[in-house]
Image: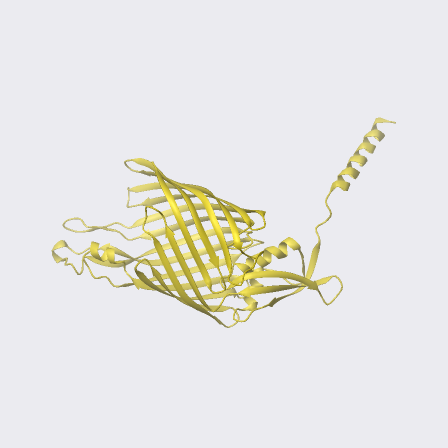
Length: 404
């Protein structure tokens, strides 16, 4: 057999073997419509919009599962179970989303014991109400440590039919009492404003922009001879702006069993600052700039058993004036084992309950004009996470060790 013919036979044989080993094409479903079941208080239109599915297109089973997971991240949705049914014509299908929604009245509780830090005790009671087809109002009262906070907010989903959401909240409370003691003054109440906008991109990708305006206590710029215990401090505002890219393929925002969540962001904060020099105070605004990256991955080892790994890095630069600055780089990593006592695959009428235990290490590398230093914390932690239609409760206990 001539060499050219022999080579051609080998090429054809290899191509045949490769084609035989190729996996079969992934089945695709032509979705003619998307409907929602089980909704009493929430907006079915918002749930469908959050899936980012377009009727009249083909989707794989994996894409439909990811779409249902995106709807699960809505604050008023507890669980979404997708179901494919036959459509009105041959070769078409209907996607039905069986939704378990949260109650219009909700609560939240957090207790965090970090061994060598003050215990964090937080209790929230609130309510939400839908306005129109895509708007939602919410209000909440929170007790954090000894502070009382009151929040009122409005979220507009699926803005102009684009899938964009915009949320605006106002938080009202008292200036912490310890600041009042520092400045020997009775300080007024505080009002914090926050605006968040989310822009969906292709698939599980999204952009998020955040703007925050928060009150800050600074030393008065008045001459010392004019200062009194009642006017030695004053309120100004610090502003923060941040832009983040998010990729999220996790199946559940709280009881995650599979998928990846990654965030890369950049932000800037302007902080008013007054140095009480004599005879005149010196004003020197601070500018903080940072880059941050975070990656979390979850693997389902077996039903009810999950391993979660995380890693992150934040680089922060603080400018104190024309020449003064400092840098701080903070890497972190950790791993968690989670066991679902009750969850989606083992439902309970009381709710979902998961035990979590793991290790986390955080380290900071600090540098300024005069010195550089580093320190770290390693923490072993164990906690319980509970969720029901009424709210979420978190308990966590940390055993921390500082490392220089």
